[in-house]
Image (tube, rainbow, N blue to C red; front, side, top):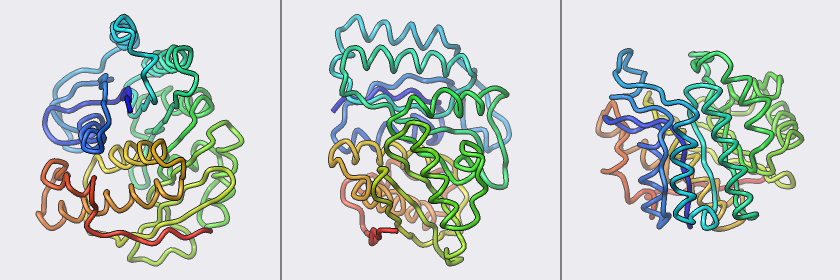
Length: 282
């Protein structure tokens, strides 16, 4: 399996491609990373160095990959944080090129916009681009609950509202939806719900809530879910496998009291998770 991953990158720590590429490689996937930004560290620290790249640079790199005759072997394009709307346009142009070369190729969009408590944290124009352009073009989308609400215009405080918002996302275009960090009216305070849907069946996994605040877990689960879905063809199975791996990763990070997720130290969790959780139909 070959995946073109177009996301942010940090030299220190693990977010964006720095969080997504290695787990996919541990699952035996050949990953071609293109960085939308290159920063010293993630922005959660409050200060960083580096720069945001532009759309033409993304297209230039894709042109070089195409010159190797590789796009026909690309099974999926994954996108995450977009530093600007013009980078988004370059990503969608890339998706079109890959689909022309391989009509079975999948586009998985992690619509990074914001989060509960932080609100929108991307540049102006990016949220609207995600909603109006990127998500409708995607086969798979992996929003958190805040992003689900923004993309659909539905405030999700109950499980019924979450299900209605997921149905609204399917209507926009994506055939597979994964929603991370769901809190509904029936969610106990000591767990985190994750919900996945393929348009016909909807499944939920509950994992224990950890007293942990780190960056990059969303990038990892989006990548893992996409790979497992492509391998199994089952959103429910992909949900169970990805949730188990990311819980193991976060548990190791919590036990070590680390500010950064322990992507390398916990790498066996991507292949053989130390703990699994029931996948229930909802």
